[in-house]
Image (tube, rainbow, N blue to C red; front, side, top):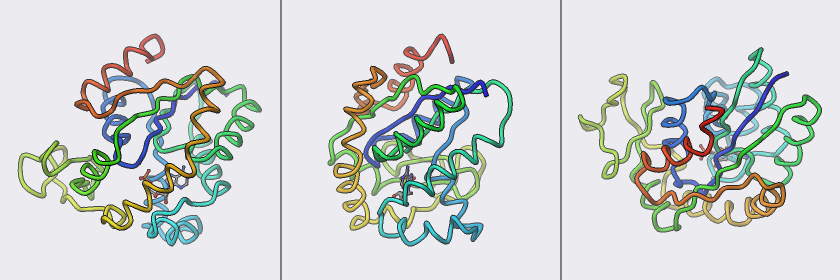
Amino acid sequence: MNVSAIALLGVPGAGKGTIAAGIKEKSSFVHVSTGDLLRDAVKGRTEVGLQAEAFMKRGDLVPDNVILDIVMERIARDTGERKYMFDGFPRTLAQAEMLKTQFDARGAVLFRVFLLEVSSEVALERLSGRRICKKCGANFHVVNIPPKKDGVCDVCGGELYQRADDQESTILNRLKIFHEQSAGLFSYYEEQGVLVRVDSSRNWKTVVDEILGMIAPSA
Ligand code: AMP
């Protein structure tokens, strides 16, 4: 298996989805968002979806083994040489360690981990104004990235909606959980020499260009 990957980490609202979409447009990375995979599973009423739904509604993390299974299953769908961009994964130290075991066994490598940094205030403001296309999943923001026509996706004309877990009480729980459960990841990746901290309070296009500049030889 000739596989390599980068990961985008950051508090909910750090801009992972928007930045991943920008990188995807200008590179050959395959975007793998665990949040999107889980939402699809919930929509499709699959076994994973039924297991995950209650955790997601509360803004809690879905169990690590479920997450690893959906990621490895997603990767197994492709063949040949490929590069993945993980978005919102890993979220815990246990996930990072399980991923390393799986990757080592396959000769795959996670060569860069970008930590998108924003303050809690910015994250809260971004999440509460976030709107997503029902059809193609494109991300907008009522103030920062407004669609040309209210409630309508610029990309495909689909209807925009607000995620159920983007309500303020759930957002606060998601931010708290990130600080409690994801913090251990940063020193883990720092020790491996793959962590890069990026100021994600800037315009998303600037952040995309900066990251592309750092992965350019392999983009
Ligand atoms: P996101 O779209 O990345 O904000 O994820 C939405 C929700 O999916 C999270 O609040 C969690 O409930 C769940 N989720 C997504 N990725 C993970 C992960 N790597 N580990 C555990 N739960 C996750």
